Amino acid sequence: MSKVFSIIGLETNTGIQDVELMGGIPEAEDIQKSQLYKDLVEDCGESEYIMVSVKSYSYGEGEPEDAMADDLDWLKAHPDFLLSEAVTHLQTKSLAILYPDQGMQMNM
Image (cartoon, rainbow, N blue to C red):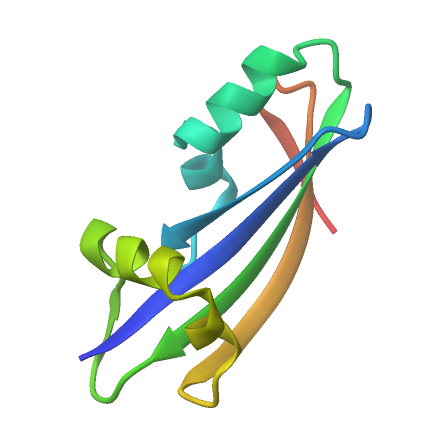
């Protein structure tokens, strides 16, 4: 099985940033349900919007499946692996989540 994961970057309009790995290729709703997003909104609730960057990758052979928590922990412990030729870039997408408390979103 090949594993699919994404590097999620969040930035508020006030300049606060955070980055996390997530399994699969998350949609806006998945990101809004993540602890990363919830923590960022809690820390800067006055933000008018949050810019989201999703860079998705895969590694391994065979049918793709979402990377699980153990896979993500291994990737976090081996950051150089993310830069290796064993990892294939799948896609990059950006979106803005407007008024975080209300959950409105806009794809960019």
